[in-house]
Image (tube, rainbow, N blue to C red; front, side, top):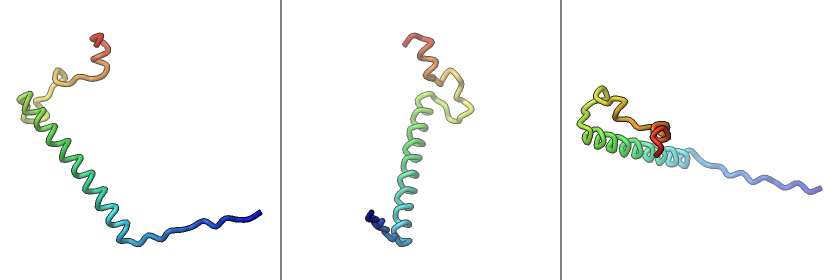
Length: 69
C-alpha cells in the first residue's frame, strides 16, 4: 500500500498579520454600519438614549405570530 505524503504550506507571520488586519477592519466596518443604522433608527423614534426605548418600540418574531401576520 502506497502512502501519500501530505503537503504542508508554511505561512509566515506577515501573512497571518495581514489576514488578521483584514478581519479586524471588516468587523470594525460592520460595527460602524450597525451603529449608524441604530442612530438613524433612534432618531426616527426621537430617542436620544437607550433609556428612551421601551417595549413598545420593539417588535419580535413572537409578536408577529400573535398578531396573525
